[in-house]
Amino acid sequence: MRIDLRMSGLGGQGLVTAANLLGMAAVNDGHCSVVVPFFGAEKRLAPTESYVRISDEKIHERGEVGYPNAIVVFHPDVILQDKCFTMPFYSGFRRGGWLIVNADRPLLSERDAGALADLEARVLYVPASRIAREVAGTELATNMAILGAVVGATGAVTLESLEQAMAQRFGGAKFVASGTTAVLDDVLRRKYAKVKDLVDKNMESIRVALAFVQNGKG
Amino acid sequence: MAERTAVSPEHLLFEAPREKHYLIGNEALAEAVKRAGVDVVVVYPITPQSEVSHLCGDLWAGGFIGDYYRGEDELHVMVSAMGAAAGGTRVFTATSGPGTLRGMEAIACWSGYRLPLVCAFMGRGVGTPANIQPDSVELAYLLETGMLIFHAEHAQDLFDMTLQAYAIAEQPEVHVPVAVFVDGFFVTHSRETVELPPDHLVLHPYDPAVAPVPAMDMEAVPVRMARDCLVIKSNFISYDANASWQQEVWAAHQRARKHIDRLMGGLVEAVHPRAEILLVASGSAAAQARAAMEAARAEGLDVGLLKLRSIRPFPEAEIAALTEGAKAILIPEYNLNGWLAREVLSRIDRHSRVFAGPRVFAGMTMAPELILDEIRRLAPARP
Image: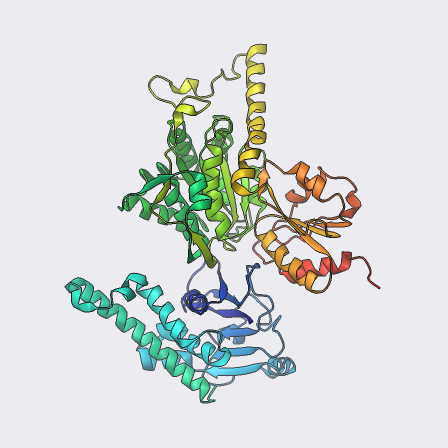
């Protein structure tokens, strides 16, 4: 098994976090994974990318994924305003790959749609930001909904490992190990509730997006 | 802070059990600093090194580092590191790109004072146009500073080489500073699996009593730091003293070789060294070359890799011997100027065998496919 993902979006959308979670989940599944973030000195709204390589064998190369078999677009501006490091955004796309776009409706130009059809790309539109707002109550969970779509489309990692990665990332291993809240003092109890709420809402966003893809609505 | 157990470098590097962790390169480096038992860390944050500055602060807050502070700029940092090391303590610092150049006046003095401090240089572009992205041209500026230079391919190398650096630098017969060079972002910010020994293990403390230059204190005042007089007064004796002192630094590099062999497994990692086509690379370029080599071999092409772990001392005898039978030699690099190709070319013959490239710079990624294209071009025609 080998999958190379290129995530393109804007600074502040959580691409780096999403990539790290995906990589952690892959490692939890027993795979090898190397995650590489890519951004400039500017921060919010500037083009940002993250790359995730997952394989059953040791991965040597690093840096940008030039030849992805999954492209994940976090924001329509990546396509509509060329806000990405690769032009056009699907350059290097391998035949038969997954293109997952955070959008309510199709937004490819006729030319891009034709080029992607020639590559036999499987295109999914997932309203990840809307799902994040409606399910988690914040657009900040857009990256989580997108992760759900990635899992639903590619099966690159299991949902269980992704949930485990979520706890590792937001709660730390000790948080998971000390799940018996009865022994925690009030401060820890509040922290636990806050982190648990965050993880729960994120996971719910992931599940809704995953179901959206699995039900063929993408 | 939990109780810590002082152990030998051999135990820490080879015998202690290791656990897998999923870390970015900067975190792996901080884990090495933690186990190195560092007395003093002085740093100034600069991308892509900033996270290490921060993490070292956390280590100090946790009681793992004796003293820690942020200098006002890199020159201040490098001078402070020099003072702390001259005082007989184990010192760590780190910087990147423009920070390296800003601190260079002090950095170039470290070896002259025979200080065994370790600095992580987390390579990025230098000069203008401004660039925070990875570029190994920074290493070219360090080549003649008298430091030992190790080039990490990945986060595991970065962890291991940092500990190896202290163990080698502090040998009384070596006692020169070590640059652990690593490509920014490609390693510093990339997350991958790293195997770490337990964090209650720490290297035995540094013993300045066995240093070739006495530690600076009230009995050995600063004027004695360089052992001999400076070339201020023009006479033959002072010239001669200074010249021999400079030669002694480079002689120390040669004496470091046996310790590099013992603790790092040699200056060069050779994979399929008898192949017709050899890739010669270091750092992230070695990682890309390794991937290209595997793809080429899957196509039936006879390709091998010489990964240079050590740039100073430069493995000239090893490269000359290992490339003797190669029909073609490729030297992929992450910089425009090709410092590694120049180093290799000056040590081997039959230069028409050498393709000094490909080169990618200013932060772009050298896809293994780019190296693979060159391998295919240079491969002998097959029936």
